[in-house]
Image (cartoon, rainbow, N blue to C red; front, side):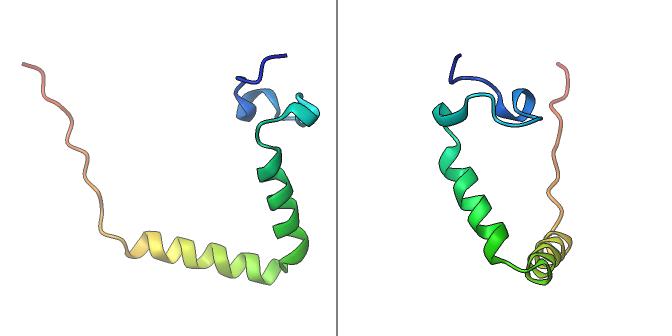
Length: 67
């Protein structure tokens, strides 16, 4: 198998590369975070992120006009 797959699409039901997965270190860190962090702490983190986005000034995207 090729290591240049799009994991978000190909690995929806689980990693298809197994030990050759280039994102294995991220998965280990994520598992550690989930097992060491309470649900209440995760909800607080999420709430802080939402509040931060709400308080940020809007970012306008000006489309290019046709010539």
